[in-house]
Length: 218
Image 1 (cartoon, rainbow, N blue to C red):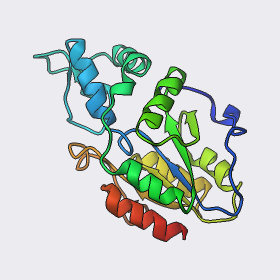
Image 2 (image 1 turned 180 degrees about the vertical axis):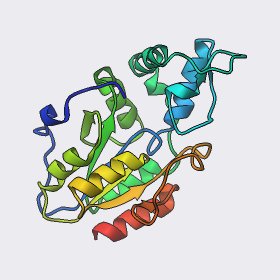
Image 3 (image 1 turned 90 degrees about the vertical axis):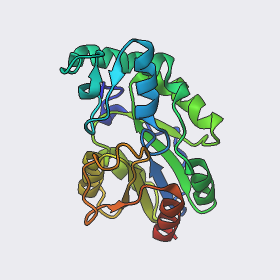
Image 4 (image 1 turned 120 degrees about the vertical axis):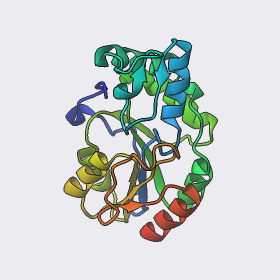
């Protein structure tokens, strides 16, 4: 994804965590929101097709009738424009707000999302509009180092939720004591997403996921 802030410069001073309270760190795209659905709808307005052929972004963008995907740099430009102009229209993953509300009775909630810098305001508004007005961190790259920094602020159990195996592996490396959950909200992507359920618990529906997270942190 395009960079927002380098990991070592991401500031956490707006994150006020109770040291003795459990912590749940949650991704946005394909976890709380259906990013591919929203991005695909945006691309249609540009006369393009978003074909769900692999667990990827730019390699799924095509001009109608063509068999070669769009140039990666052009795809990246559409990606950045989506976050600037249309990310607020992203559909909601069913059950996410209710599950986080339930978990917030037991734990602090932090939203950790990889997105370009121009996405901050739109992403914050999208979360608030859907009842998920929790502290928000925008970053880029593997999420293990930031998760470790957040987890170091509390003495209670910590859970991490993401759709991407690379982020889950990163957390396993940098903060191995954190309970890790993989979740892919879009049913079209579930069979395409790389997964290691023997290492990271895989639960794709929020009703079951919320209960599993609660069990892991209480």
